Image (cartoon, rainbow, N blue to C red):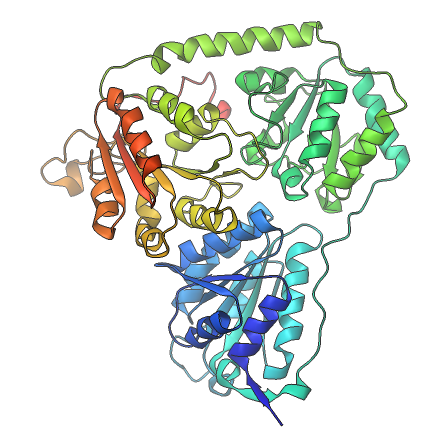
Length: 552
């Protein structure tokens, strides 16, 4: 009678559930899982830090539609991996974190790195459980997969003790499970579809808010058909970028504040009224604004703002219903309305306000001048990973996206350090597309050692660091007695992150004059491996002044 060990069963179970890549940092007791994964046809990507590994796994889940998987060692490894688990849960991205654990028969004895891992993981995920027997491994992996992708997607955790990983059982005693099917696409009642269309048809100042839920549901074709048919103005969330092309004439991104404050009907399409969209509350919105809300989670309906029409279900299916409902209507939103005119006027005013910075060749560059060259250089089919404070905020306004799921950023949790992990995931999922990582010099410090991972696996991501010497602007020089005299936000201005990349075997470029930037970018793109362009920018450069604090 043949036997199988726990590590092999874990690898086979991941493969069965459609998970063909595993991220992690090996050590006691999870190293056998990585080795078994490779034997079973699951590629293993060894990272330098558990946080970055978990960030890669959650981005992989979003990009592929099946959970990303990550293995970490006991105790501190699990604690570090919770960063990606929490980020996945907040972003509604599917992932499975597998945490090594001390032996089941030593529970409570003070074993090596013993920790209450299921307990500490539970607040950060949809499902957390310990695996208590080798033969039940497939059962738990299927359950973790199903919980991660069904309903609102999210994170799951499995605790894997050492004696389960190395333990064996008879093959014929292994619990048999099926692959968790893709989630069913739930539709909305037709009366709600008609009510939503009726409300939009009577609106004077309608606005569609497109969120990453539409990207997750692969609804970009349906959304584009809906916007083209209705001619409704739209605004995208930071990770809803690309569901509609950023350069679409109906985009109101350049007049965001005015559009939100003055809309009389808002169609919240796969987005949430959280901090990113200002909770749906005044003064960011009109007090009497009416809301149509499309969300996969029933409990999200009416959150922070009462909903006029609720569309609960799958984004792709429901927008398809809306498009069918439009087939019998002759209505579309006219182009010459006062609403359109004031949006166009405000967008032109905002563009004029930043135009001098875009064309300012003074060295060091300002954000807008540097991003002008990055935008012209970045291919239209690129996957963009962006993080940093001013770098990301301004970068997402200046770097266009044209395809769904082509923009990864700090997301709902506002997490710094996600960038290189997400770029690595993008390189794996889309090896035929350019991957660009835009980072501030503070943000690159969180996961900068993953440059070695890029080189080791020859992932040809191109990194652009906008370097202003701080978390925000720093100081021109490090002062004497820095523990008392240095700004708490200061870093070394002009630090040579490009040399770090070169030390690992990639290509580095250092740019002090904006006139040299495009040439460096072109050289980086022509290099076959990973490259980093380190751009010194002015410490006086910032986004345009906001009228109120709540604008930020």
